Length: 208
Image (cartoon, rainbow, N blue to C red; front, side, top):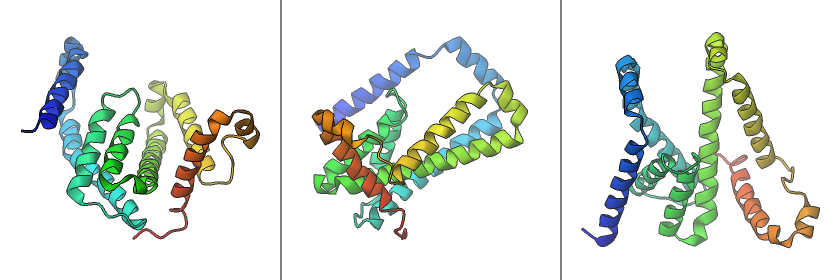
């Protein structure tokens, strides 16, 4: 066993231990006693398929731009990203990790393809999620109202639609005059523009 692999194993164990330490064991016990295990085991069975579909979609998007990555390598980076999503403050931190690791492996000259395809894969996944939420809200409206999540859901839909509009339209998210007045914004704005252009290339390009 190499030193780096040993360190990764120890780090993983420490993170899992930290996660378990944050759990309120009494609440967990009550939850397990009242859980509907048919749905629980169904979700466990579907989870590997969902992860495989996400990784495969990412692979297709990169191949569409001329970058072919092996399935085993891609699955490993994808699962690392899923792992970090459970610990980092936001649910997108793991995506940054997986894209960074894959870029390091395939070479920095392919960074736009890796990051752009990752963002498209993420956006398409979120689109499916919001469609499912809207359908669920329509057919279970009273239940959604009882959860008091209608307004947060509406705000999330508006925010997501705004992001899609900015990405796939000619709207400039940061006005040019602000960049001119704040030269420090020039580099990050140029980087975001490159990623935006890479994502927009998928709009009119047939996926193979």
